[in-house]
Every structure is written in structure tokens, then in C-alpha cells.
Amino acid sequence: MILKKHVLTEKVFRFCKVGKGEKYCFFVDEKANKITVKNEVEKIFSVVVDKVNILNNSVKFKKIFLGRKRVEKIKGGQKKAYVSLKKGFSINFENSL
Image 1: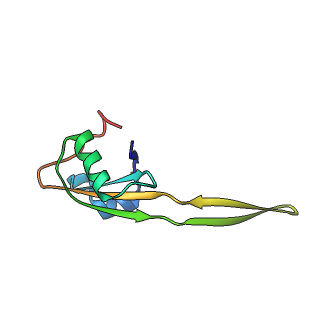
Image 2 (image 1 turned 120 degrees about the vertical axis):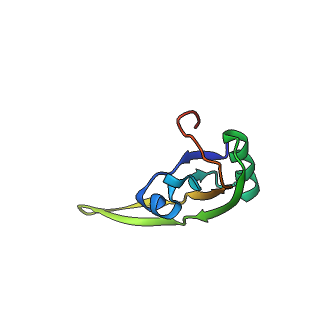
């Protein structure tokens, strides 16, 4: 399974205009590319995909001080895919994922 889960944040709402049903954002597997994401979305949701953009978030290390100890925490390292659909298509998330 290439698609891990659907992303719903304020930034995604503003950028993708989710209410209009044109663009959607997903967390995807690290080895996924545009073609495999497009094929997976079309197969699972039975829609026609117009364009796929992929974003790699880099891994960030955060230093936390607990008394005299210093602990490094790893954050990020996720891959996102922004999927644009053709006009007239939308995804209903109640029945899938």
C-alpha cells in the first residue's frame, strides 16, 4: 500500500481548497513516485488524476535538555503527495482508507 493516510490540516485546506474537491494531500511511502501514486489513487478511489506533486520533508533533529542529560529527538522525514483531479471528480473518504 503506497498511500498511508490522508492529510487534513489548515495549511492543506488553504493550499488545496479541499471544499471544492480539486486537490488532496496524502502521506505516501518513502519509495513512491508520481506514477505509482497516480495509479494507486485511480485504482482505490476510481477517479481520474490530472497531476501529482511530491514533497520530501527532511529529517530534523531537536535537542531536548532533561536536567543534565541531553536527548536528541528525530522529527519529520515524511513524504507527501499532492494529487490534482480532473474537473467533475472528487474523493469521498468515508468509504475508503
